[in-house]
Image (cartoon, rainbow, N blue to C red):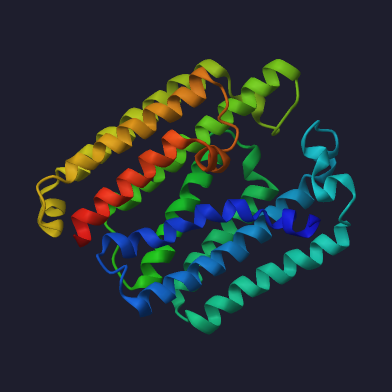
Length: 289
């Protein structure tokens, strides 16, 4: 069980972004392309789990002094560092092997290699650099979109790249705010650059990014090329779910002050689940109905 925890399978949901290019390209029912995207999803899950392992190994001494993170498998001593290194190497090799066998192309290797390189740099050093840390995490989601587009053999629009980056940046900033609140209350340092942020700064930045995200999405829905591609004049109707979702997440972040894990929040919050489901169903009707 501890080895499974090291992989953080709950975080694999982030890799579902690889399916978006195929969905918006109106080809989600194309079985060969769908299978190719599933392979990309598996490769990214293996790669991301290897990064989580690397992160835990790099922070083991820091985690042992943390009131919550000290219970992690490596920090607690339930999994030894040598065993963790073997598992890390295995996952990293498997992720590259999956792409080499099932999606052999130079662009796909470049994207996966870039993802691994950036995340290694992040785990080893760059996560301690304020602002750059949140930008790199958001860029990781853009790489997921590009990987999905390459696997599906579609060209991602500039809109999907912009919206993915902004949404990811919004969520990461909200998580950083939770780190700051915990530090203010308990002096527990969730990450070493927590003192480079404060609540006032993050409140302003989160609100700014949320506003830019919503405006960008509305611009996307009324773009003439988008309306012509989907042959629908009511794409803007999907914005109601985006607005509701952003407002709810802002409430969780600024009022409830519980933005500690975007993945777990979405998995537990019924309102957000309704927003995401409603958005997907309405868009599916617009595209495939």
